[in-house]
Length: 88
Picture 1 (cartoon, rainbow, N blue to C red):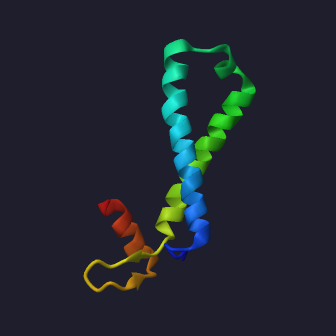
Picture 2: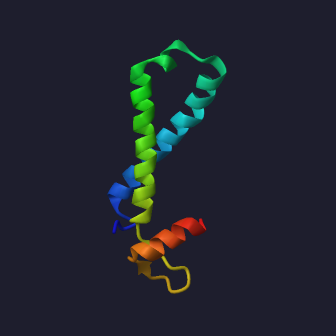
């Protein structure tokens, strides 16, 4: 399990935020203007890389500890982590 306060986890979350901002800006531009650069194979590969990173973020979220609000203890159970992930 990955500890939620691990320094590497913080860097990972910063990367995810940057890719989310990129998605928020790029998607409307691609839909509205259909630029030529969005039709190239390099763009296709990069978009699939972004999607892969978001998928990996789901995997990381399932393998990250969390603090139980009732006991205050850090929970290391992958099953409970997955349940907590779906609770929101």
